[in-house]
Structure formats: structure tokens, C-alpha cells
Length: 174
Image (spheres, rainbow, N blue to C red):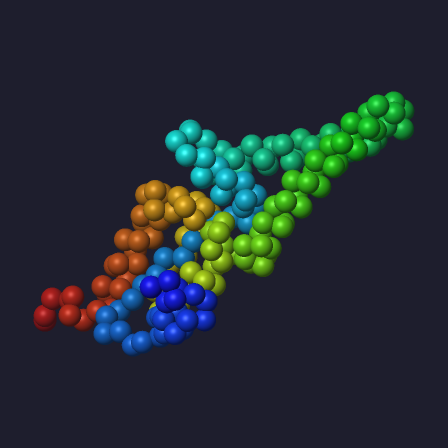
């Protein structure tokens, strides 16, 4: 079994390549590229009330407050040197937050769309027509997709309905 899931195995190469007799549909998740790592961390904090959206709001606020601090500290640093030191510290925090987020996106999906862990291109179902691949935008991260009734639940129902529309044997006879 473990040999089957090894990259490059015959099993994985053949997966999704055979012609199936039923119509297919797929649900693809695309989380916002803003603060993707923080969304993923927030969605994986266990039973805490903090979720991915809360984590994104918190890091976004910290980032923009730090940008303001860096600008104000830089401007007033000419008059009062300790303000320049504080501004430099804030600029360092801005860099760390942005660099960490960029590195996560690059590591996960080479900077392209993903659900925070699985690249968008790997979510696509081979052989499924583009109109039957439902894209959930601003989706929760990978581990919280199935718990999202509002976004993922609707997309799953839509995928089933689209597949059923094109399957003649599910249609009542004339």
C-alpha cells in the first residue's frame, strides 16, 4: 500500500486517467492569498474560539499598525531619535510578517493559489470539464474545508447538481 502512494508510482500516475461512465464534478478551494499561513494556523488551533478569519484579522491589523508605526517613527526620528528606533523595530516586524507569509505561499504553492496547504493545480480533477469544477473563493484553509457549511457545503451541493444535470440516467424518462 505504501508503495502505491509514493510519488511517481504507477498507481498515482493512473489515478484519474481512466474513462469513467458517470459524470463528474469537483470542488476546488482557493483561500485568499493574504496571510495564508496565518489562516492555516488559526484554523488549526484546536478547540479554541479563534479561527482562520480571526487570525487573518489579527495579523492584518498588526501588520498595518506596524506600517503606521514605522512611518511615524521614521518621520519623527529626525526630531526625537528614540522614535526612529521604535520606527526601525516596527519596520523589522513588517518585514518579518510579510516575508513569512511570502515564504509560506512559495513553499506551499510556488506563489499561486492554494487552500493554504494544497496547491490549486493539485486540487483539479483530471478529465472534468471546467464548468463542472466549482471554485470556492476565500475558502477556509485545507483542514477546515469540510466544516464550512456556508462555502464548502454549497459548493458540494452545486457540484452534485451539476453532475446530475448531465447524467441522463438520473433524469426521469420523457
